[in-house]
Length: 222
Image (cartoon, rainbow, N blue to C red):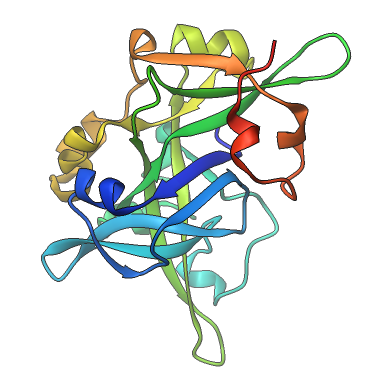
């Protein structure tokens, strides 16, 4: 799964994803993104890739702008075409990429779970594959939100995350099939990211609280 991640969207990141900022802050950086927070995502609009800020935790169209009682931060690849919450966005081709430089998982350990930062080897940017939706409340307010698609974990991630899941990840150069491709092309990229192209290391337990944020959270600890 993916329950926290590191988001950094600056001019260089925008160029990497060939994205034009639209409804999003410029120079956005957050080292401990948590569910319900709004973060920049890349999606298609008016024939181009644009950057908008959306809420993490998909609110279905039929929920009338009200978050559901169950978690919608992750959508399993096995059920995105059938689950009531996700089949609509999937059918409508409402796919997005969430730019990131790392995400966190917790490994069982003596004295409590140990958080790890997982990333592309060397720390290069990548994109999380997501689905987005717009849901309209009774007063006409439109809430736009997203979920991160998860796939079976690769061997490296499985050693840390015992539930055996990981987010669907793509390099900026490989995002085209997910954002612009036909349904079959998009479905084909939802696979585990190669373990040999990733690394992971332990970080401070301060990341356990979403109230904490700052570059020290991604520093390696002994």
